[in-house]
Length: 418
Ligand code: GLC
Ligand code: MG
Image 1 (cartoon, protein in one colour):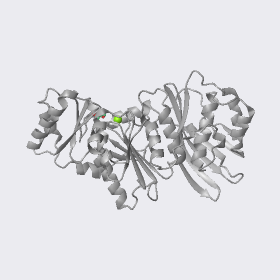
Image 2: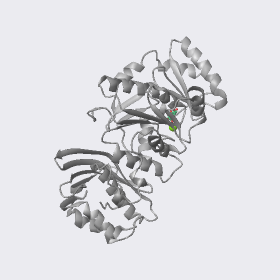
Image 3: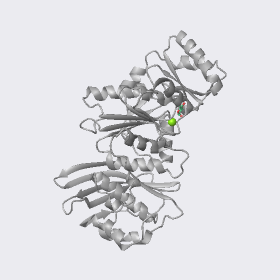
Image 4: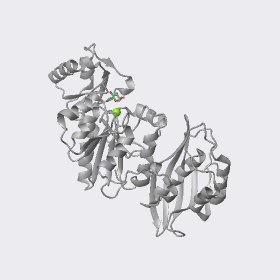
């Protein structure tokens, strides 16, 4: 919450499954485009919030399966659990609030009388969320009956149907929309309400997000029937809601452009990155440099000395690179290793992305950078923490003065190059 000193320029609140994450795209094209856009142009002054139906267990599993960057705030279990930062510090105030008119045992007792409901996995049963599967044809009748009996037992619950199969029972005050309203109120009280907020979703549990006053919203092209029905009945004339023509994260990028919330040109969409020098920010150089490395190793650029010279041009003449193994080289010398690895990932679809880029100015022309860098080879991934110094002393562009890398725990077996 305290990472930004003032209001976020943009706060994106996005669902994960079938919104930020496209389970039908093994190449992860659109999420990687979003990641590069976010880290290069938004991370330093904006906020990323993931809002998922998944429990912490399944959320962490998804992070291992897909190239996801780290959000500032994570809302899990359909708006019943809110955590902050990389270390995921829970919001205890929210938990207190949800205890009102809620008794999980009564919900379990009453729902067990409905043969139409089949209980979801244990990991998905949470302190303020009880979840089932139920067939589409049964959902209306079951919901009505459940509302009645639970009310009779003194509870005030919210029943949400998503994806044409999942039924969640939550305290009335919970849900993705309520959790967002709670956050906005918190920001407001600190005088830091985001300048713009964009909510993104595809299914029933996302509908609430679109009814929060003042926010822009995007329903991705692949949105579920129940969300589109909600939209037709409740929000058809709201110009702040877009049904994108693009799937998943590509729909989010489309909406940023549609609502003019800032640049929506991802560095991954730029054909000549060496000429991509508008909106200069050191984070932008971090993203571009690593994309150039990816393109080289995938043989998507020409194998020329000119290309290598271009990479060397952003290294300070005496800049030092410390490899995670501990060996030390001049950055310029170490870049020669790239001659050996041109196209080495052919057949293995190498992807490189950076996460959680932070840049702080520590002198008139000097910046301290920190970020995680990940490489994915098919199923195998490895990552390292990078600390670096960049300077604008020698040129009007950022040059690398010092790079120090340390392996992250999840390291793979592939040789680490740069
Ligand atoms: C996620 C959760 C599940 C929930 C569904 C819809 O899939 O794992 O428990 O029912 O989202 O909210
Ligand atoms: Mg979804």
